[in-house]
Image (cartoon, rainbow, N blue to C red; front, side, top):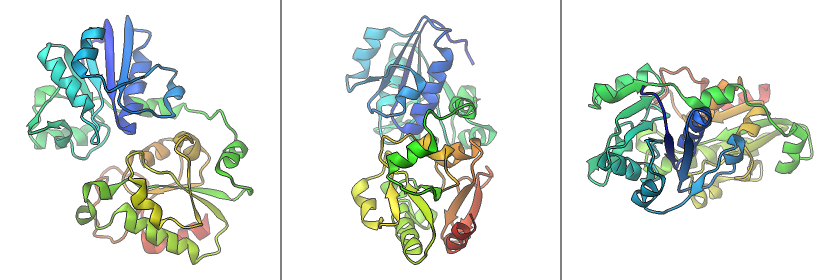
Length: 312
């Protein structure tokens, strides 16, 4: 990878991209003349990094002209085109560019802008499997580099500022029952039920029924994905499931959890890095698993969930 220098411009949208890009910016802050960080979304976790983020919808070209960066480092979000807009300007103005991919899925699709693909000078990937996938779908070998995830290094040393009592008070719990954190990703946004054999709506409905039919003394918290269309999911959430306020820090929930549940999201990978018990729920053994080779957590069927919750 080229040596970073001068003025760095960092751009992201989705939370996964945000955390990786912010970690990268934090690591380079003392090595650069100056840094600028731009997003089209605001997240409560910005304060964890101690960095100023410019939240704006100002056109990319105007912002690049104002900042005049020596390089541009972006995430690769699927809900926004802001990163691609900055990569387009970088290419036009011959500014060296990097784009970081924080997962193994939809690698090429992340670079689709309108009806064409826009690639940076360097595509940074989390591991060798991601590199193999990138090469197999035609991304040029000269642009691909295994880089790891800057956020994972940050997570290994993360410690909470709040006690578990303060967290429970925020959540409204008046007991000391064990904490189960459920973090589904919005598969229904992409119509992925046919791919995975289920989506977060169906799974949450059935989990709710399991909880209603049990007398488990647990605190079951759903951490809504930032891209989740709340009006879709809310109809499947009953009294036994507490939806965590969006301002509650995800790392805090993970740190004090006794168990983390989900499907394929980075939240589960982050929980495992923080040495938590992670279980990934499937409807059927034949369901497609994009993390099959990554050994993330333990796979269980929905039919096994009640017994699992009884044993914690």
